[in-house]
Amino acid sequence: MGCRRLAAAALAVGVAFLTVPATADAQVEEGIGYSTPAQGYRDKPSDTDWLGSYRWNGQHVWCVQYSLLAPDSSEMYKDRDELRTKAGEPLPPDVAANISYLLLRYTTDPTVDEAAALAHLLHTWTAAPQGRVTLDPANDFRHIAYNEQFHFDHLPQAAKDAVVRLRADAEANRGPWAAKVTAPAKEQLIGSPGTWAVDIAKADGVLVGDVPVTVELEQATLADGKTSVELRTPVDGKPLAVDVVPTGAQPTFRVRLDSPADKPVVHVPANTDMQRIVTTGGEKKLAAEASAVARTQPGVVKVGKTDTETGKAIAGAALRITGPDGVTPALRQDDAKVTGPDGNPIVLQSGEDGTATVSDLRTPQEVCVVEVAAAKGYEEHFDPAAPPKACGKVEPGQTLALALTNKPNKPIVPIAIHAGADGAGVVAKASFSTTLNTGALIGFGGVVLLGAVLVGFVARRRAAARS
Image (tube, rainbow, N blue to C red; front, side, top):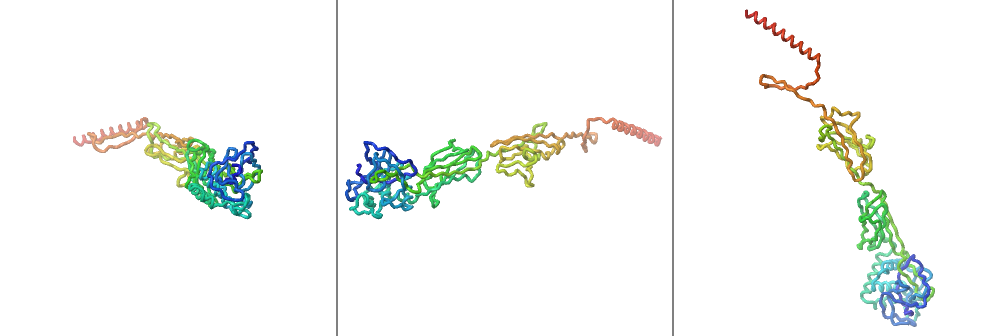
């Protein structure tokens, strides 16, 4: 097989030079592909051609420069060069981009039909008639061009279908590519997942599907707790959506991938009659990242108002929510101040159950609750200069419970003075004091004594009038 001239092409960009010392048992080994009838030219050494890969020192390689010697393991490839046509001319930019794309996508694990289709397409693009390289069968192996139609006609139908598919794929998705990571539009909360997006786009902005990417996270994890994962963009060309859980204040999402090189690169043999070879593994590296600001989970403050003596709930108490100084407003999750319509710290009224609640508070932060007006029935012991107050720290995702108590007013005890012998009639209610007032009692006795004198005087006058 050492005299076989035909090989396929593939891309290797940025990899180490393929340098292997010569060995005594060197040989040419065909990889995957098809043998087809030979295209004739002067001194053609075989009646078949090979469309596919070669095995070179244990790996699949593809060759360019149609009809030159196929590689064997004794050959040292000592340098790299830009891939050109067999005539030595630069490849048109669109052709170079097509080759780079196909070699990125179809050299790692191709089917036999894909390997043959790749070989056919790359010889079509690099060994077409040009200058002294023509289809004239009188030419030698150095100057014979690749007969595209002849070789296509002799491929199996499945390989022909692969040729059409790979060509269309290359023209639709060739490079250069650009990578982009987009953080969620909604604010991130530590401990709660948010969806990030990865776009791999062509120069026209259209997204490329089924691209393998490596995702790496910092101050964040995936839903399963991992900080890195290998994923593929959706086949339908939509953005890759990844759910990320922030674990710190600045979650960062990085993506790495291989993309088609700007220009295909080949490895050059020392023997100028041997084909140049390329292999997978040297693609252009792309990277992108994005960061976001993540906040802690919001917190809640719940205040309970109770009666000091009975422990029952007090409704109707006016409660002001403030920062730790008892004057400035507390802050919401979005850093907005918790204020009322007047721009001052918000004032809430305890409900029937004696509670008042404020949610969506920034955490952690110190919060105070100050009573500004007592509920009905509790005014007597309320001091505006030293109102009841309770403070505490609101923690992420937690409810801070604060308690305030009030002492009820002194009770008013009613007494009844009955009118009439049977107690029927108007009832007058009055308050009484258990404190005895001596002067009042003496006064009250004098009045009683004067009444007795007046009664006796009247009685005597009535008696004299009857006598």
